[in-house]
Length: 127
Image (cartoon, rainbow, N blue to C red; front, side, top):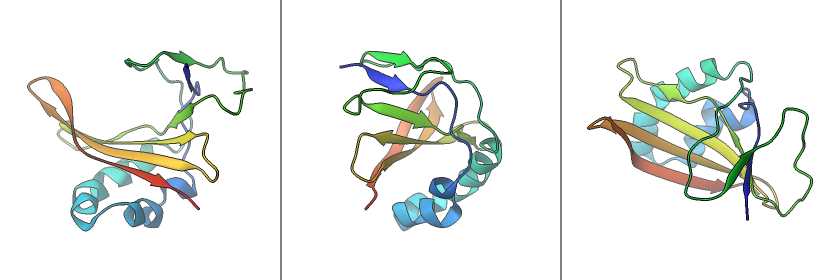
């Protein structure tokens, strides 16, 4: 099964609001994520074209006018990441489906030995 990736980043909306992201994270995760969430919201003011991310799973970037047609196909829609001022950590967030009410993936990645490493991650299923 191929994972479909929408061709543009998602722009800021209620799923990226301060209260929404904070409600999905533990207190310690929020402490590390809060400043990065501010830059993520700022960078996500408008949708931007995305490069195809590397993945162990088969992925395909949808064409700009193409819509996911098969509801059973996994679809991922990324926000632009929020970076720390030293560019050594980033908050990454995406909405994905299909799910009955939507779901989000949020993670903190840090640059260690010239590679991005996941420090923590959360998946939230909305009801």
